[in-house]
View 1 (cartoon, rainbow, N blue to C red):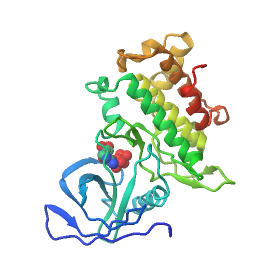
View 2 (cartoon, helix red, strand yellow):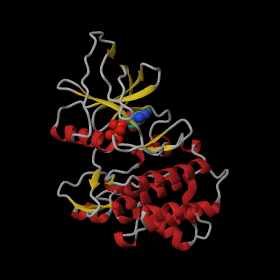
View 3 (tube, rainbow, N blue to C red):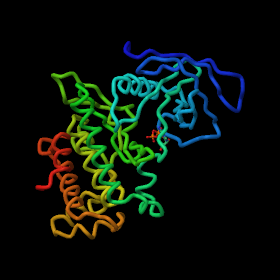
View 4 (cartoon, helix red, strand yellow):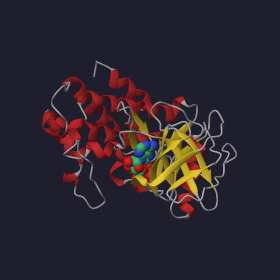
Amino acid sequence: HKHVQMASARHADDEEMRSSESLLYDLSPLRAATYNFSEENKLGEGGFGPVYKGTLQNGQDIAVKRLSATSQQGQLEMKNEVFLLAKLQHRNLVRLLGCCIEERERLLVYEFLTNSSLDKILFDPARQHELSWGQRHKIIEGIGRGLLYLHEDSRLTIIHRDLKASNILLDADMNPKISDFGLAKLFSIDSSVGNTSRIAGTYGYMAPEYALHGIFSAKSDVFSNGVLVLEIVTGRRNTFTQDSGPSEDLLTRVWRHWSRGNVRDLLDGCPAEGRRPQEVLRCVHVGLLCVQEDPQFRPSMASVVIMLNSRSI
Ligand code: ADP
């Protein structure tokens, strides 16, 4: 991991506020910064451990992720996240500002995103009306561009492997940013399909070839993107699990309505005001193309982005 310089933090004794004069490794350009965060300002609990709100010395808000247990897997995922995110910069990817990796403390520092994660709004019946059709469409497009950048435009091939609503963060303008690169994989130019015996991710978003055989590629991310598109349009979570019958699966439900031509019945979780029927149909169509069983038939993210903006489908 020689591309990433790990800086160490020296903590002040102050219990309440951890004000460390640490060298924060700002990935581009390199600069020293101090930051602080209070354990009272907890934003949530993630796979790594707790996430706190904090500030940089210049007043910029930040989110600080702390690895709670020193599990081997957690440490690997954390290093993977730093290793990959350090190479990337795009308006639809969360920015990693720095990290602190020392024996007693492991922290990742990100830009702070005011509107938290998409799942918290989209799947909350009391809040989902806050996401207008226009915002949903913008979120779908932004995720598409972020994923296209990962797959092709960053000149690297990166497969995210854990794309889901809780890994989409929203800034103050509801611009989406893909986060959580703990499971992401970097491919070289001449290989773009991976195989693993350790199938990690979230079942409802997993492509069948990945869930069943551990095979992943850009097309398995495309599948997850399709699930996400259909969730955003309908405001319903794909609750499919290994034990669910097919009737409970969001994808089956959308497909049934689509083939009968009554997509409107799917939209009870999406405000009617400002909804554009043509755009809704285009998004559902794109979502269904992405979740096809055979990865070869799924479009690339480049095609997805073009289709979302095309008026001819
Ligand atoms: P998970 O491992 O479940 O994907 P995370 O560790 O990424 O979750 O984050 C846990 C919670 O912390 C998120 O649901 C979100 O509410 C909050 N959070 C994470 N990163 C940020 C950020 N950069 N800005 C604002 N809130 C964040």
